[in-house]
Length: 314
Ligand code: EPU
Image (cartoon, rainbow, N blue to C red; front, side, top):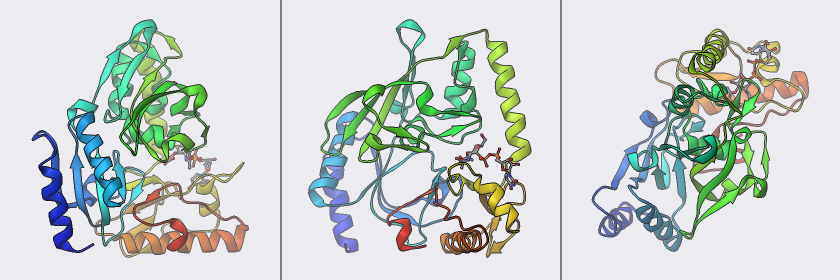
């Protein structure tokens, strides 16, 4: 699509959205990701309400514009050329919600950061959210990816998820209707998670929950790098560890431009300053080739690539 067409679409959309909704042309995405690489979104929106989100997804549908949902940007690789589509982020405060519900349950909006969910749950003495400490994600992204750490994953605490279909319809999906696997939820691939009803495992006092969180924090600080990264680059193959495999084939410190296989944890590719998406992709190809050659294992990326399927670039 030409520049003028994107401009025209932006103008048409703006007239149908409330002023509280932010809409931008050529919004740089690198600062919105934890890896800090990649280009701009042709169109970018932060809807302030369900109605505005409906307008955005329905317009993308009728105009056949690819739609991307941006969470905290922590498990994401944006290509250098940017994204030919509409990127929607639920960063507006109306999605940043943590509300008590009956029987100790809580409602968490898609835009709430996991760090804040973890902290608020601890304050309320809710047990079961501690593993979220340090996962640099939002509730929406964590639902879509079934994010996990420290032996737990998101769907351990989910009772139901509110989603928007790409036709704008909003519905509640109970946990029992969802097909959940390691880093995957089938029903959330083609829908947008708006929020979830979460159920704590138990109740305890704040100090006990905080001790557990501190333990996880120390473990993470010892075993994971501090530099910008997209978290773990590859899924763990069944019964194996991607980090250990990459380490064993001697790739810690391997570098393409400013992209480097972390010396702390080999399943992290870190940005040493000015890495490009092309650097990261070249390094991903190198890692996969070496692990395939020496270990006969095909590593599958966990990180999402915006705008094209991984198989087209590997
Ligand atoms: N290991 C090495 N060398 C390395 C890295 C790891 O030998 O460079 C070994 C470790 O010593 C350990 C094993 O590999 O024996 C597993 O490592 P670790 O405990 O760090 O866990 P992981 O399987 O590599 C998973 C998740 C992380 C999550 C951690 C902590 C995946 C792909 N990774 O890592 O999630 O934070 O457990 O619970 O599932 C993510 O998904 O982005 C992510 C970072």
